[in-house]
Length: 338
Ligand SMILES: [Zn+2]
Ligand SMILES: [Zn+2]
Image (cartoon, rainbow, N blue to C red; front, side):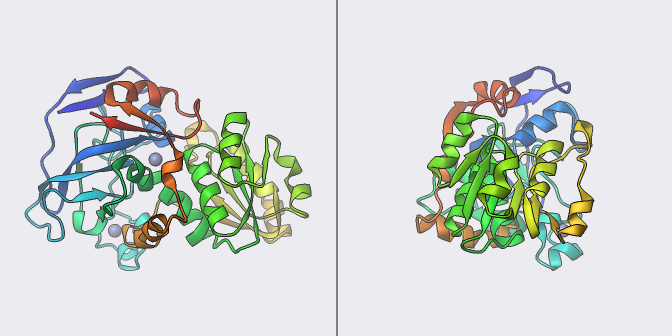
């Protein structure tokens, strides 16, 4: 099969012929129809993820068609159209038993713990636990964004922050996950302040319904008459994490969505404000496959439109350059030609 590989961290990303994977007994191999280009792929390429072993194939936001099925798989067969959360849960640990598959203690992640979906085929573990059937009306390019950024934003806004109608929600960083969060928060009836240094990203946020778009987060308490009720660091950087916590009103909720690899420096979390304002500091990490029906229902009803965030469709030969340039162009890029 054709796959995008890197042999050294930060080194060349090249498309080469490699052997296609076989399914594990409980897993499947999916013929990839679409694979999103995400900041996490850039982190893997940069060597920020300790799970990655070289040489490596990135890619974790995927949709496609089941091509081969392991002997122990019961729910899936060849030809099924599927997507999968980027956290593939084991289905057997204490967290999985509690339904919290997104923090499974024995999770695998395509594109991190093994070769990912920037290839014609990808192997996925524990298929009965992790695969999500795609509705007929949902194309692969749109569905690929659900595996990481859109589902992660949905979980952060709806399941973790429990945003209520009329609340102010600040979104720091308007890349793929941030723009997804803007759309989900607006659909939940919130009033949104979008923060980014890129005018193009802020224009997209305004198109998605953000009431205010600002480059400077210090104005948020004034815009929101006392601070945001909920604030998300959707980028994952020391400065956006701190800005997110500082812009909250008393008893506000900060949700950390963007990854914060220690190699890029630890944020100075203002714990004095956390205690003085009784702030809540929450983490959000992907979304369990069994909670996808609520998300898919809102998409089918037209209340959420992840397809509006897919701004570029690429060939696999263009994916390396896109990973190297993550963050330069607003919106979501998806590889759809392999
Ligand atoms: Zn588990
Ligand atoms: Zn991702």
